[in-house]
Length: 94
Ligand SMILES: [Zn+2]
Picture 1 (cartoon, rainbow, N blue to C red):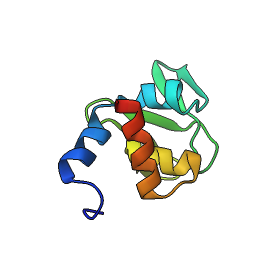
Picture 2: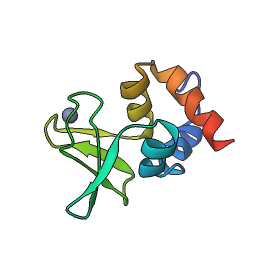
Picture 3: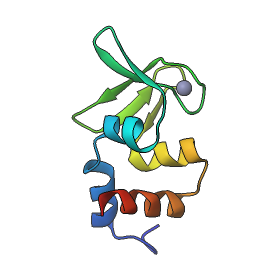
Picture 4: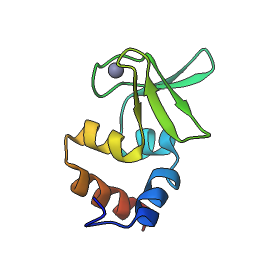
């Protein structure tokens, strides 16, 4: 993957776009506040057994036992590959 994007670029894409903003405003993934926590529809299992860790900017599905960074989230929701998902995130940051 270093072939296309620098480590610095990828780091920025994973951390500069808050996960909840990406989910709500950009990807339009269904989400809700439940028990005081932001929950999003897991793109893999379609359940809301999820949470976001603002410190790491990762989304987690407790059912799939999977963490999503911003790039993973775009890949899972849009069903696009790594390169196209990174390019999509770059358009958001610009
Ligand atoms: Zn899931």
